[in-house]
Length: 220
Image (cartoon, rainbow, N blue to C red; front, side, top):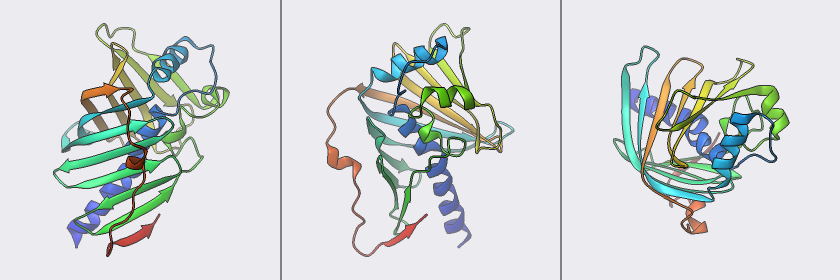
């Protein structure tokens, strides 16, 4: 029972933190900002309509010790649609159609369904889809000028009441290759993307999930 509870807690955290970051990446800014880092980031995101490939996800505790590594594959499409399938060490599937998020756990035989929240401090999903003026009021966007091999952008909330400390997106040759998020407890989740294909057609049905017959449906 303890294992099931811990697994369910972990999956809920991933819904709230990691998966929603992916939605933010494919929502894009609504209009240009006069901040140079924000403008650079907007241009990179605007060049992506879809993205798919493999991922390796690593979580670290606040002391920097590695806690868990998982691998799988993903498909993303603007605006805010994603298919995030974890294969190892525990199978699970996250699907979003930009209105609803489904989290399917075949081991627990459960499907958790939740809607988006519009609270920018609580949901990274809306960081890059919100009005730019609102973003500039709530977040600082910086670019790591010392990084000569990649473009790394960090978004930091100006008010520290939310669930995360900062979100970082890393691009190489205009391609998103990595993102990480540090939560309010100091835990870092880092996701490295590989075999990435940009702007390749993705079937719309991938972004809708029909719960299998017999599984328990939960609403968060």
